[in-house]
Structures are given as C-alpha cells and as structure tokens.
Length: 305
Image (cartoon, rainbow, N blue to C red; front, side, top):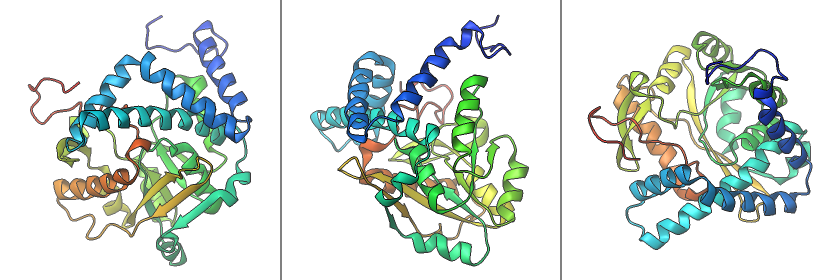
C-alpha cells in the first residue's frame, strides 16, 4: 500500500495509532481544568525538545517576525509558544469531544456589536479567523452564541477526519470543504456567517505576495474573492486565552473597510495587517509551528527553513 493511501477498513492496523490519539483526546476532554493546563504545558514543553523540526520552524518564524527582540527574548517567546499550543491540544480535545455549555460563563466579548449589527440586518458575513492555539475551542465558544458555518480542508486520514467533523458538528451548522467554493458563497449570500482562516501558506497558485510582519508571504486571495462574489463584509475575530488560563475573550473587530478593493495585493496586505495586529497582542498564542514563509517570491530562492 502506498504511504499516502489510507485503507477503507477503519480498523485496519494503519489506523491503530489514530484510534490511540482519539482515545487520548477523549480522556483528556474530561479532565479537571487545572489538570488540563498542567498537562498541556507539560506536553508543550516535551514537544519543544522532541519535535526538533517544529521547534526549528518556530525559531525561524520568531526571528523573522520579531527582529526587534533580543536572542533571549526570542528564545523565551518560542518556549511560551510551545506551552500555549500544548494547552491548545487539551482545549481542542474539550471542544471536539464534549459539550462546552459549561464554558459559557467564562466568555467575555469585545466588539460583539459589529456582528450583531450585521445579523440584525439579515446579512451574512465572513468571520476572519486566525490560527491561535485556542482555535477549535474559540470556534466552539463562538458557536455557543452564534450559528454559522466553517470552511476546512478535509484530513486524508478518514478516521481522524470523521472524528473532527463529528466534533465540529456540535457548534457549526455546515462544514464546507475548501474545494466547494460555490456552496460557501451560496450559504453566505443566504445570510449565513462562515468562519474562514486564510493565514497559512497555500502555495503560489492561489496566492499573491504581501507583507506579513515585514516579510513577503504567499497570501491567499480567496478571502477577497469570496467577499466579492457573496457581497458580504469580512469581520476579523481575535480569540484570546486570558492570563488565568481559565477564561476567554472573543473580540470582534470592525469589518474590513473598502474590501474587496479589486486589487489582490492590496486586499491581501489589508488582511495580513489586521491578522498581524491581532497576533501582536498575544504572540505566544499563535501557531508559529507552521511554515508561513515556505513559498518565496523567487522560486529559486533557498528555503528559509
């Protein structure tokens, strides 16, 4: 069997590791919250040393994006990033496995009036999400108060994909594959709110190059195109885990202005600028393990990683 091929039988030995991961996530979802935080930090600390490749990617990203920080400060931020994302694993488990209505009282809103205004007018909107470590839990918390859809890239592992889809069904009306643009546009046109996270490198074919933390980054153009086709506004959402590691802030920023403008580079630059501003508030909570700058403007340029 080819390495990238997954068998149809869900109990095939190829999936045993997946079932162990699902079992681990299921158990951790029901741990007391202080225990989640403790083990989440421990997992993050372990990953920082065990996942050398991811640590290297994180170090490169931090160095590129925060050149004003000293080497000591950059090293500290790398560590904080791993700890925050370790906690994020346990938050994700909670969001995917169990009902989270018990978290409703832990949520503080900022700028909720921006989304309330759009919904009161009977319009749809694109929620501009960001890959913070609390992304899945943030989506679930958003879903406690607002109905909506999400767009996602299906996982090649069918067993794990079903697990994720089943979990997200609890708080999203529809999960739309990234390949089904027509359905996404149709849903938003009909007054639905759709969660969309464009802050990763999807390659040269679907991107333009725009500055992100001062570095030219392949930036997907689909955000502007969806907004133009559906004639809806784009509303940035910042998900913040508060310092107590117990409560959360969902901050809805004002809709992007003059967006889309018709200029792909200008639109991508605006999206990157607002994402960067949200990240700078709590940079350790961002997913810096992703190769955000893997695609270079010059294809012949050596990899930054």
